[in-house]
Image (cartoon, rainbow, N blue to C red; front, top):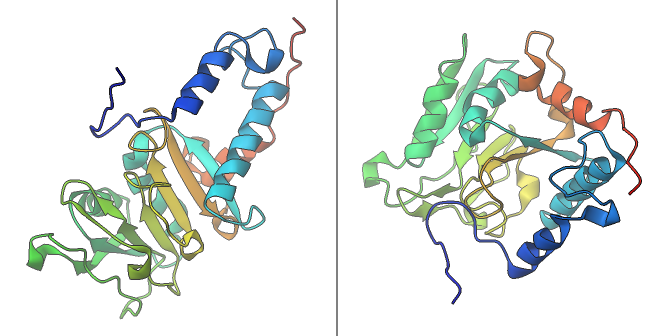
Length: 245
C-alpha cells in the first residue's frame, strides 16, 4: 500500500522521480558513481546543475536571458535578511504586505538589518487574517522593493495570480509553500524564493529565482550572502576530470 504524507514537508515526489533517483543512486549517467558521490567540480555535476536551472526556468516560463537561479542552503527564512542585504541598497526602505505569520517573520528579520526601514503597507489583521490583503501599487515613500507571501499555510489563505498586480518597484515573493504548485505569471516578480521541502523537493534546499539586473556584487557582504558572488562561484567553478570506470 502506498502511503501519502500530506504534512508540511517533505514534499511528495512523483513515482517517476523516485524511480529515477533509484536508478541514479548506484550509477549516475553511466559514470560508475552514485549521484551522491560525484564531485561538485566535475563535468557531470556542472551539466546536472545547468540542466536543473534550465528546466526550472522553463517550468516558470521565464527567459534565461533575463532571470537566473540560485540553489541555496539556510532555509527560506535566511532570505528574510539576505534579500534586503542585497537589494535594499538605494532607499534602505522596503514595503511588506502582512498576510500572516511568515510575512510578519520576514518583516521582523529584515528590520534587524542595520539602517533598514520596514513598512507594513497593507495588512489582513482587520479581518483576522481570513483573507489576503490587497497588494498596493502606489506608495507615499520610495521603496527598494515590495515583499509578499503568496501562500499563508498557518492562516489558510493564498494569492491567486489575478490578485497580484504588476508593480513599478521590484516585487519579491516568498513562495515556500506553493512554488510550482500554483499557476502564476512569474514575470511579475523580480525575485521568487522558496524553501523547497513543502511541495518541490526534499528538505535542505532553498530555490531563489532572480532577475539578472538585480545581480550586483557588494564588496561589503561575505561571499555566501552576496547573490552575484554566489552565482559567479558556481557558474565559473573549475571542472575536475571525471574518473573513467
